Length: 637
View 1: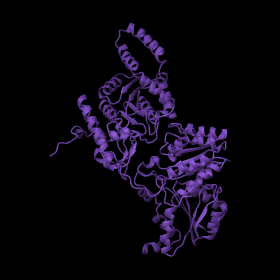
View 2 (view 1 turned 60 degrees about the horizontal axis):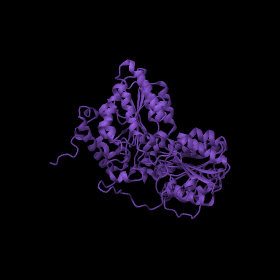
View 3 (view 1 turned 180 degrees about the vertical axis):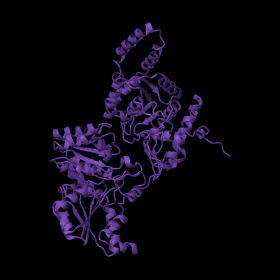
View 4 (view 1 turned 180 degrees about the horizontal axis):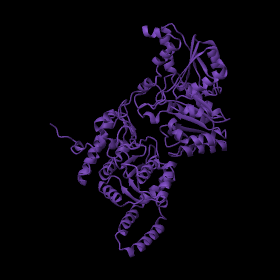
């Protein structure tokens, strides 16, 4: 029998098993944990680089603190795979990001070691402060609260709101700044430069940390003088740190891969901290796996890969991705209009704007993980006469909703919102599913809201947005590849509020909004085989609605069914409102609206998620039969 490659990790059923280990064993355990993480992700795909960067930190935190009583909160939490392995989920890592499997993020319902769920950035300090305050108010079974936040997430304004509040309260709170100089994309902004200067000043910071520790051991009469000397030296050298000015004790920078340093600092903090303290750890994303270390994004996200070479197993593409079509279309528009600018919030690659930045570097802006600022920045650009395209994922745009309302819609400014990841997105699950943007934008005055049914329509919608200058306009498109339609060389602006007929039929009309149109087409083929020939239309617009098209469909058919990749309150609700106001229901029209269910759907393959949501071709066929009271036909089939 071959000896295990992970003898120490094999003995770990939970974090309590780490605490009797020697420091030497903990160092070996970290090496084994890194290897286990690499092998686990190689089988499933997922977020790799972030987890590899915090292996030593994960081991040290669980070894020093009494989790789950002490609340360990990971910001974003895509770096939590090593944490999952140490907290009793090692045997389930093969189900990572799969249907009924482990989430790719922390999740309260999954484990008591996940006290707070996450997947979006900059929330950890606020949540940890909530736990710490609950502890002070007598909450049961709450010890220390530790937030681990990356330097990328620290660009989000919410993190500063929490730091400011924590400093004001003065409650014991531990924040670990995991500084790898990388979120998903290279860092941007003054904070990144500031952290780099702190790192460059490491010798002084080490001296300062040692001096701070030594002050506590001086006789009382000498302590005040020592503190004054320290403050004088600090002021002469750096003028203080931002974190100390916010009320935090600052320790670091320290080497986040040096287990001895981590254990020493964490043990000291655990035994002596009285108020909020920030530990600044320097780490390397993708640490210990050369293909990830050398990747531009630090091996942020991968498909399944070969452990030896790092080569990823990716299926051959049959059609361009929607994201690439958007980027190429926008580049084409920008070549003809020098007022077009592009804005992203720390997702240049994910939104395709890395391609735009290569062509127009002076006209592309990455604002960091700061969607609120990004939206209002776009509003200012629009007010100045520029044509901003604000490219943000559907779920990330939720973070800037007040700015969408107050700074864009209210002032009727022509900001163009390119909403990627619309609909269900697969392995990232509910936190990244674009379920709500149609509803939360279509209820705003002045907005135009479009959805692309295929990649050619997306190209036309980019052109439409570029040409539209009378107010805000949004267009949404899904993750993944297009459907393989013939692509126009150049987009042509669509008449605002005008849909298109795809098939003329009889009895029932199916009005599709967005990327479910191929499923509608597949359902129609099955229905034709049953002797039913539905009319099919592509709405294109949720606002303004194509009133003439909708009312004609209602007038000429017994039944009208709408379908969309969005929650209730979106396109179908607006169609129902129109039909009600026009008195159409008074004449007996059978109307149904197919939307996403009123629940958060866990991760799975996109097809599995849409089947669970009831939005597949088979579901559409069934809905048509039921609406026409032809369920018996289905039963006999």
